[in-house]
Image (cartoon, rainbow, N blue to C red; front, side):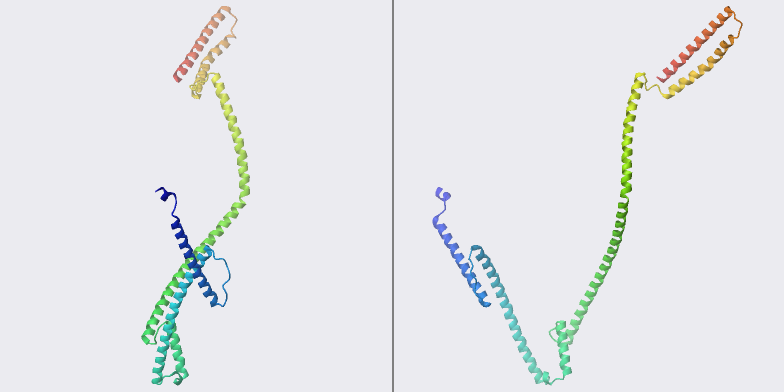
Length: 302
């Protein structure tokens, strides 16, 4: 078993080599024979060259194809020769019949010969094998059908050509419009670039202003935090407190006017002291009332 797996039989290799050599020799002989026949046909000698495995295989393939085509051409040529012989025999028989009835070509007038030639040419043109009227009618009908088909195809092609021409005109108009639009866009490039530069500059300025406003906002927010501002102290609350202050000022104004009027009285120390004490009490009451109003306003906001 190890011998069978480890190596091959020398006798088998020798037989394979011999078979391959015999096959190569047979192909070389066939190629040489084919080359000699081909070059002899044109009156030339076979040139010397080296018979390699590649060249022999290529030439053998060509020779096989050439022999097959020659065989096929020979079969076709023999068929044509047989048909030509049949046509010649049929022509001789028809000539003999015409001569027997007195219609030989030599006895016919030139007009009849010319008409017969025209009739034969017409038969060949219509691809018919005889000159019977029915054959001519069938051939003419077939020709008419073919003409009708050609006319229909021509009409269809003309319609398609008209559609394509319409598409071409539309495409040309569209191309003209696109070219005009392209030219307009190219003319607008410079103004648009200038406007873009302007927008870019404005964008830079706006970006710097935005940073500045954010910084100011941060500063104002820090300032409000330092002074104790809370969101509850809104504009409405401040307006309400200002209105209360104005009301208090209106209420204390008569008292102040009265105090100023006392300055015009004759100096009496006791009365002046009483009046001063009274005015102080009224002023204290007014201040207390103002504080109460402010406290009530803040409490209502909370």
